[in-house]
Length: 330
Ligand code: SAM
Ligand code: SF4
Image (cartoon, rainbow, N blue to C red; front, side, top):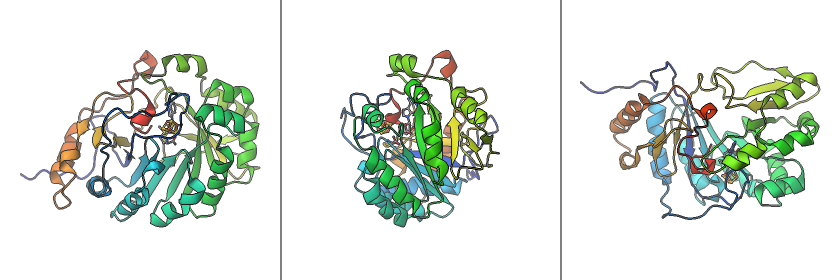
């Protein structure tokens, strides 16, 4: 009997409509919590080609995936990024082509990405203080990144969001400056609670603060929690009548965080990863060359899903085998 999969689901009743696809391990920033010594080449660069990403995306779309986020490393270091975006945008059934970037060259390239079919843009900005941004990322580029965000806001994206890793120093500086940033800008700023990875144990111990510090501030300042959209991500977002934008929190350590997991990950070398904080991965690369027959690829992805765990074990201090998030794209 022919093997047929109509949508991807696991043994815990969760179905998967969202894939995070890393397109490179390379990064040009040195974020203190991710790649403090910068990215270093340890093996030949052999990342998925635009044609392979297109075949992968088409297979996922066939079984109900409607959103793909490009991530990395830093996706914008790939010279063929616009080509990758255009390939994904041409896949029937994919309605959201998203990307997370550190904002490198954003002002110069965002129009090209938008024209290629990018629909949702997330830019990582950990601090609105120029010196602090420089200290965290290793680059004095805050004004350029902010100019890129303002250019993106004129391009009719379905959404433009900012990611800010929540650090002790961010919390100490307070959140008023972020509220001011979204007063007239239709952007959502989402704080991401710092996550423990294989390489950042000491950094985590020194810099992690609980996400409730953000939500306590928001609630005290009159911000109101918004209902989540059905296929929405893990962020809890707050709105306030005096502000156009929103502020939110992604709190991976909160109870129940994994219950609504709707995402899968694929590495830049074509390995399916079931959980950010899991181990190993299922190699798909040998099946990514053929555009005409996707059934073996779908069968392998679907079979691997039976091994997806109920949740991560960060609370037990077990971050899996991930050394830093640039390996997988967050
Ligand atoms: N280079 C791109 C960027 O920085 O936007 C995409 C890849 S980066 C790994 C994806 C997201 O993960 C970024 O928003 C980054 O701030 C976040 N991130 C990286 N390491 C993290 C950690 N240990 N805890 C929480 N967020 C982290
Ligand atoms: Fe690079 Fe993104 Fe990691 Fe920063 S968070 S070092 S920009 S991959």
